[in-house]
Image 1 (cartoon, rainbow, N blue to C red):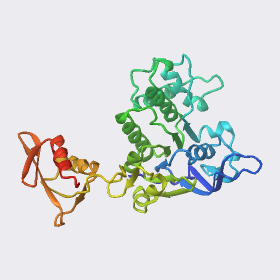
Image 2 (cartoon, helix red, strand yellow; image 1 turned 180 degrees about the vertical axis):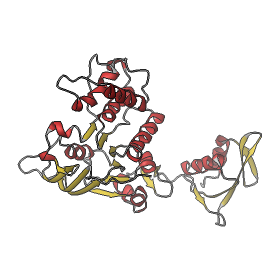
Image 3 (cartoon, rainbow, N blue to C red; image 1 turned 30 degrees about the vertical axis):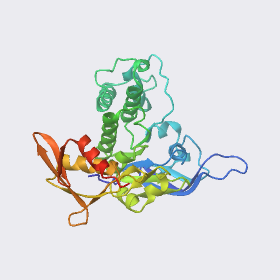
Image 4 (cartoon, rainbow, N blue to C red; image 1 turned 90 degrees about the vertical axis):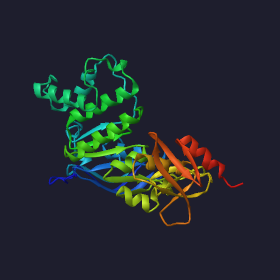
Length: 340
């Protein structure tokens, strides 16, 4: 579990308005109040164009606020020099990085330069921290590989390693799981939460991966299509309907009961009760039923019962007096029951 810090808050925004300056231009979003404490893993989600990157860039000083204030470690952002800011917040943004012939170690080592001497020399402790940061993102053994020779996912990991090596109270990651495959995305989410909970960092992490955000976030920050920011526990925003209001479209919707997005197609429409021992076979049966548009009901309801078991080491299902094995056969049986 996370333990809030006792010192100044790593990040606080008060009545913040974000957007672009210009005659007659209205703020993209205003009245933003936000606090991220040490040990807090805050995940920012929202549809494309909702203003997530604009908010993050404003919070770290890469884009000026239209009004309101941002504080880093208790000091207003506008009063902090660029050099001092680099010791308070480390960032990874989605801008394409071009590091030429630099190695993975060289890229990660940039995170230590705010702390080096006038000749930018790394001491033994700096080098050790860079090595640990590279290992933390899963690139151990690739320290001497040229950045230009890495895959897109490996480049993203190297940039996250640089931010970790910077060792700041606040870590801001804008789409750090872009270009990563599914296991690597889970790995980065897990790493970010460990940095918050065990490392005592305040971590702000934007993503389009709603499923992982709901699983890992301490605080969910939701920018909706109207550029309004809602904050709360992931469960609160899911149950309140806020996630559905922000993301639902004509062909898909957020299913509060499962915490995932489902097709808005009518589907089979059968009510089904699952009977059998708890475990992966029953869990994956439930996923199949949801995918086909069935409603999974509790025991005692007026619904067709599917008995789930294991027969000859294969999943077996009994429905309406018929016994089939394998999920493909169960899907065919269910589709036979589709009302005309």
